[in-house]
Length: 181
Length: 257
Image (cartoon, rainbow over all chains, first blue to last red; front, side, top):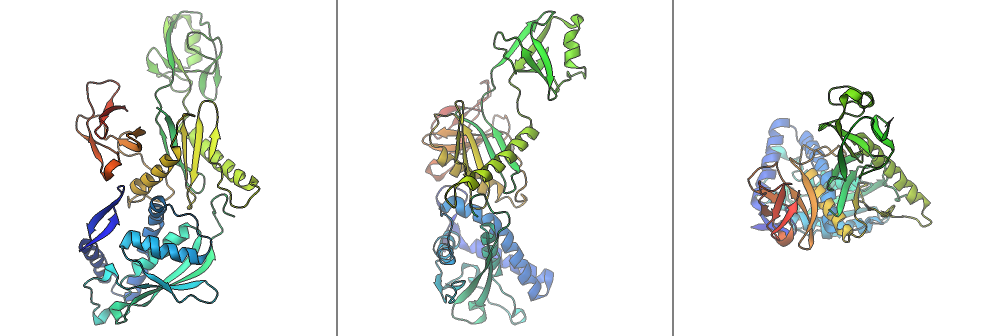
């Protein structure tokens, strides 16, 4: 089946999501072979995601033309409705806001990264889609927001939905672009 | 060409990309006999005309070449000092090319970081909070347009004062940056962007800004970056035409390199 994605050209281009899923799977299995320890693999995925995020944010800003978000709720909306839609073709829902408005959950009904994937028993603490957490963290850091993203529910581990918990840590004050104080 | 230059400045104020795309400025090459009726002086490692204007040679023009060979700052191609060479009657008649001195890369770097500082000052001077910073700087010979992204990168374009549509050009350049620079995994953020193989120029073609790239001066096809219709168009450089031109297959117009 196909998923819509941007491909560096004006407009959208269909790409096969199978190749994407297979590539991601090959990446994770190779990391598992290289590191032999689930915690290290999780860290590597987060790091790789971070590097993707710091680049992806520019592509996102260039193509989507969204302006600066003024609070965390706006950020959540943009992430779920614009960014996830643009890159993965899914629209997660936003729930479970904390009373202070600094934490929320993204509920993903289906996760294109985990099509056809089944976690074996010896990798029970592997966070398969941890790349996404790194991407979110990296992208938001480039727009001066330090956040923490982690998976609290995962369909691969038997839960009904995939849930990513995002927490706002602080605004990054050093190296602010001019005019943003 | 309506677009004179493009500068991309990173978060810290360092110039990471620069492109000049204007036609060579008015240069004058004349043969002189001794004594030289122009007064030359040494300034900033270049030999400039201090006094004596004639035939397209203006005060402030620099000596670019002597007898067809490009000078190297204040020294000729052979390593002799230009002023000494021109002071010796035995070297005449001599053909000298004058022209407006080009900015060196170091000077461009300095100007970019100075602009970055001015931009910051501009935002601070703003009576309201959250100023966009300098968006345009206007002079009689050019207009400078600037767009700062949310991540702090500045795209600066110098264009003809009458040229319209620069805002969409700045957005297009942002898109091109996010593609060509960021999607290259070997490119490190905030570092200078290596120019794509061969020359790239930006131009207006059929109602949209396009990036013309050309690997090198070959007879084969090259890719004209026309984005109209969502597809890049093939473009054939014609070897026999001088200066080199490219045919934009999107609009079938000959575009100058």
